[in-house]
Length: 305
Image (tube, rainbow, N blue to C red; front, side, top):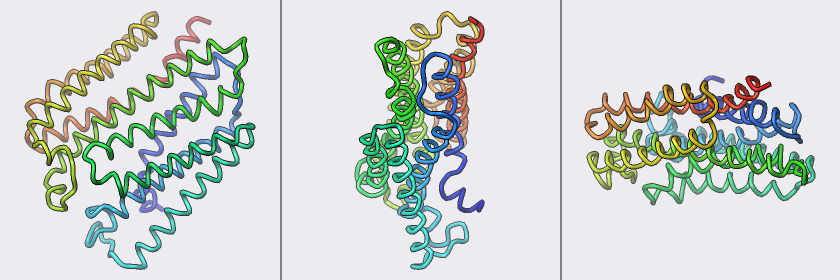
């Protein structure tokens, strides 16, 4: 069971689920009418997690340095082992799509099932076709997180839209887009930093990455520019949406903005593995704090009430 959870990146799925639950129960519930109850939300989380888990498993199956590679983590690469892995992939993938199809029909929006199929196709392309492109693979991870956040809005709020609540539901959609964009951007930058750390592995297995194409120093500058852009987005979000809440200002400033500025400071001079490990650990902390910050709207609501 532990090995299976490792194959599907159970920790990453748990963090993703936390973000989905916080959007549903701390961002949406206090402000607007809803469609999904606890059971419906469980179905949605299961659909998203099984498809995402299938994607992580497929990455392990197709990567030349993954769990199924020869001599990797004590797993012998054999036809039977890979056959079992692909069988699990198809089971997870089909289960996620079927749950998404059931939930779409449950809320009277059968067309929404296409989004689960789209996510599944993107994960398949990421594992196979996108290997040829140095930026598409890391970018796909961020796009899929954004899509996961949008799915909560589509299934929970969109069906309940009326003339009376249209403005608040549109406002919440903007919040979800910004949160999803910021977290997706963090994941994209994190993957670029991880590629810096894995440049020797990528060179050994001829895996295309920005680090191999540009070199460490130039890629550092790209990461610097992307991080600076992301800081601008966070500041914009802070000024326009959270400026009235002192707790939010302090939280975002201390736990998200200052660490991002530290990443800017460290990344330009990074050259050793220990440097990238430090920056990567900081990015993991920023990601977690960013997901937790979704609950700030519930805190603001409670204070006002």
